[in-house]
Image 1 (cartoon, one colour):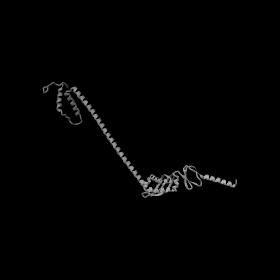
Image 2: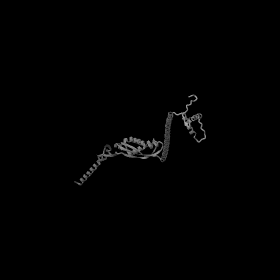
Image 3: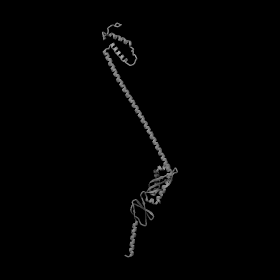
Length: 317
């Protein structure tokens, strides 16, 4: 074999190897390959080992994973004419490789500009206070707008997140003073409510204590009255029994008028036995004297008590 044949054979082998290498395309699992043949769309390759015709077919790979676009911060004017700085992050995923290549050029730049424009429109219809407390609402509205716009680009916007909303410094200071005043107001209200509640509880406690004390005194008074009534009843019953016994004993003994007179005189002696100079004269003085005269008749023969005389009285009895 001549040198020329060796060179030709070697060149052919090298060219064949190069062509084989160029014809093999490896697509990773998160990628899709769009094949163009002579400048025209031909097919979409899936993951794995694929072959193309070198020189006639070209391949463009598209990443199908979810990724993000950082929307740069921008100045936005709210409904109440306050300039705030806002930035966001867009999460998207390619769902159609053909559309993302042939229906839009510079997709990421187009998505950023679209997000900035609609973010200004959305926040322009809100006041500053509404914007600060409505981040979730802004996220949902911006995602809906971007998802509708990017649907024909073969892209699905999964979510949009507002990273920060920066009001001007003077507005931040005013909001800080307002928040401090509001917290001071709430603290004063809570303190006043606490004092009011404590006073009410104290008054209710004093009222309850007074009621219980009054009830206790009433019950004690009732108990004392009942005890006094029972005491007087027992004493009265005892005195009544004693009187009945004395009265019964007197009647059983059949006392005479003379014996009763002697007992009466003994009682007068006890009454007159005092330190005062007053003279006690009973109303029955005449009757007593007549009784004393009767007693004189009964003492005869050396002071012996004789039986009463059977001398008839004036009426002949």
